[in-house]
Each structure stands twice: as C-alpha cells, then as structure tokens.
Picture 1 (cartoon, rainbow, N blue to C red):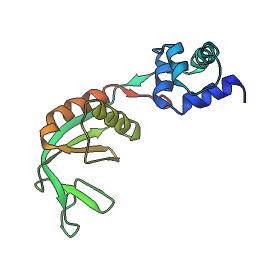
Picture 2: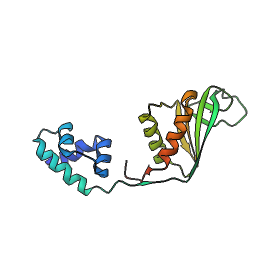
Picture 3: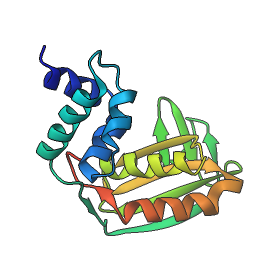
Picture 4: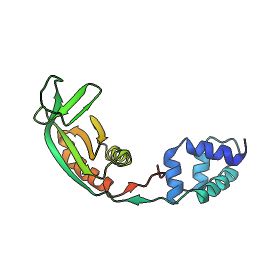
Length: 167
C-alpha cells in the first residue's frame, strides 16, 4: 500500500480529522504524529496536506425549522390509546408522562440534522435519553434540568448543518 493510501485510510478511520482537513484547520505535523502510520512524520504530514487539497470544502447550511420544548415527557405503556411523541424499540415517550424534556424541531430535518444536533449536545455535555428523526420532525429527549440548554444547542446546531458529504 502506498504512503498516500495508507495515510488516507488512517485519516478516514478518524472522521473528526477528515472534517478538520476539509475545514482547513489542521496542524499537519500534529495530525501526522496522531495517526498510526509507520513512516517519517514529515512524509505523513505531506500526504495529509495533499489529501486535504483534494477534499471538497467544508460547507454548512441553515435549516428552516421551528424548535420548541415539551416538558413533562416520559415513557408510556404500549397499551395507551394516544399516539406517543416518539417510539423506538418498544419504548414510547409522550407528554405528561414523566419529568424529562423533549426538544422537537419540525421542518427541514433529516439524519444529517440529527447527527449535528447530537454532536453539539455531546460537546455541551448533554446526554439524550432518546433521539430520532422521522418525516419532518426531529426529537431529542433530555433530563428536565438540561431542557433550556438543549433547546439553545439544537437551535444553534440546526443553523449550521453540515452539507452532505461533509461528515
């Protein structure tokens, strides 16, 4: 395997590094030291620089969404007659059923929007209980005390969703 191919493989195993390469915010020497490629650091840094030049630029887009918070969310019994807010793996979440908070975004949402929202929440130290997207609705369930911060975080994330291919 060539040095260029080995460097690309090692970089691809670190999605954050590929995103940073696309954004142009990488110290190539530090990145070369980080990657597990058994070649001289300067050679790996050069291969990374060339790889970065071939990658498309980092692009984001703002999504047309309405984001709101729903308090009192919790798990509900499957026998309940009402339609839950969210259901996955046999667990359903609905309003007036607990002490969690749901962040609901409706509009131009998809898996990319959910991925960026979850990434932003993780950076804020907010760990959702459940999350999903279906149709034109994105939902994230968080602890009640984290609701306001989660709302602001999701709103901000949806203002700059990475364009497809920029993962």
